[in-house]
Length: 556
Image (tube, rainbow, N blue to C red):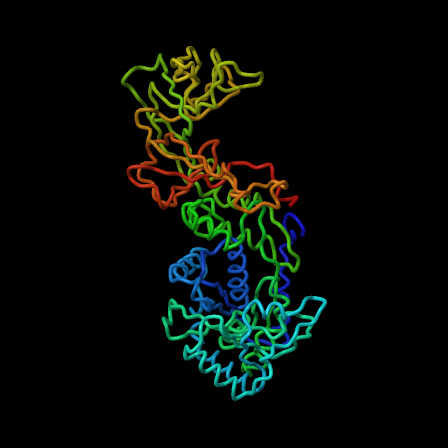
């Protein structure tokens, strides 16, 4: 498997196929579909498929359906149906038609009856384990089921009774009759229908037999007139079965299946089954936990739809699997937010500073740019007074050489304010620093053009009396990138430090910020107001991404 980005020229081999199909006349209109199973929330891998299907159709004036592959009622739920629609819309897309595979259950049943009448399908009584044992291997052919020779009449009767609910789950299946010696194992009499006495989220108890994906998918595509059925590489070996189902079921439309490499991102869980386990075992705060690679989790964290779309376009569409560095995605987040996000100052680990020569009981308002890279965002005014908070990390009592922030006797600039000099260090009974006493030079006010002397360090701050308490959540990948853990259960590879919660302060003009609003907090990174836990009584911010990275996208 390759590393980094699939290719830097953002190639899309499927787009080339579409161009050729339109030129040759094989298709007159491009029709694609995004077909998720509603058994969980979408993740970033699905985002690539969503962008590919919708943008490909849009580029050529075609259309895209959103179709739910709801053929497994045991795992599916309307919660997931609703969440998936919200995610697709949030990414910036809208579908031509909203469809469900369950819309076609009757049609699929009738086509299965047709297969039986043609001698192309039979009811099999083998259980799942017996079926696997007789399927053979890559080097050995499979063995025919003893029920393969049932007559058409017997198969029709049994299949009808399967539908009527006469048999228990797993007691019988309908299998295609293709070739048990085929080198392609997916063609060795695959199961088309299984019995499941389960309540379906849309059809209720109307059905107790359900089509398998490899049968339902091509039939659904053909019914909807899909021209380019795009799926990931693991379905490449299933393409002959896809074509067989369309041909033998005598579908009017003939869609074609094309496979592309799925998206893999470093330090990221890309299995819906594993993600569900994290939710079910309360390892995370639901599907939308901001550490999750789900679209809802990334939305809550503060990722933008524009950045995700740009990322998906840039990594391209290829036939070979690859792993994309997570920092490449972060690059697109920074690029999207740098001109949008308002700058502000926040103190995550507060240390109180008393400016002893500033008049008691007085305060002033200072001008601060909202975004130095986007003058159109204007300026804000921030209060300044005798007492402020600075970061604990911006003070050292015994600093190393070339430490330019605050220490006893040293002078620094307060961002947007004045020069201050540390005069005294106050400690508690444990010897920990709890307060600094400083003096300021009123001649050094920011914006006055003071040039008599210079300082090497600039630190940020928040005025103490009007500061708003806030919780800051610093997020790291859920997975540890440790080769020694590669063979361990994925739960043992989880990062125990994926979430760090800090209590600090933000500027008073942050009062009333809305869920989802995004800010660049000086030196700390880009943050978003949490959409679930933040409220009028307590502000909660999720760090979206740090300000800088050593990652060079030009070399990816």
